[in-house]
Length: 296
Image (cartoon, rainbow, N blue to C red; front, side, top):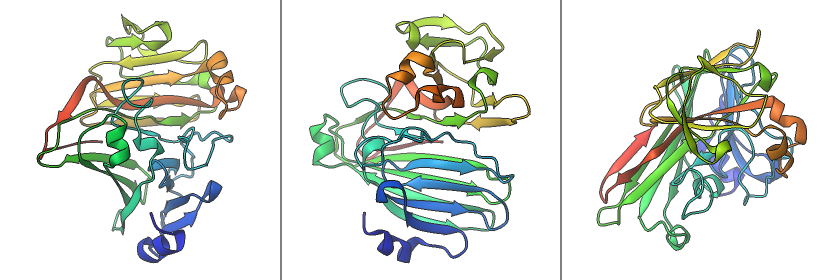
């Protein structure tokens, strides 16, 4: 990974991109537009996007004030990167990308955007965990200087001669909201969803807008559209999520009881976020040796 000082000497871009020691001393990269209030912070631990502010100065991600920055546990809030497994399975919950130490591979200050690219590769540890493939994962976080639009691109390349890599994945985004009870997620009407709060039972979404704040909501919407809109509440604006090669979507809010069981989130903070996630889970993507795949 390298020291913060060494990384800063290589990857800092004066006036826009800064490598620094974040919470717990963990190395992080801050992208800050020189022409607007837009900014984003990404930790190398998990390649975890921990903050995102748009060009008007609105902070759009929830980070738990009790998140654990020990370089081992996944950070609670922001945008955890779930790969190569979403949810439970043969590997640790949500895979190992979100708890791994990534390398900072590149930064760029371009005419209209700032970016940082992170890299992670297979190791004896990932093979011992049960993921046999030899692979390299790259993740590029791009921030538009003017409006602050955030773009995330995840790409996996599998070495020639390697066993194939079966992949499910998610960009597990915690959007900050004034009140969970006031949000509406639009674009999912008529879709089949797996209701994880009810044992995985499949249902059809009858509502024009998915709402949270009255009970636990944990739904995987299958074959979702590429555009989903989150209305953050009265006078709070909206966020439009556009995806490619993430064919499913998740809406999640832990509500009261599940939040009380989380050691790294205050009991009342279920009111402060809703997760709307770009997901690939219905059908695992299998990348053969010598092949590659990507999503955003």
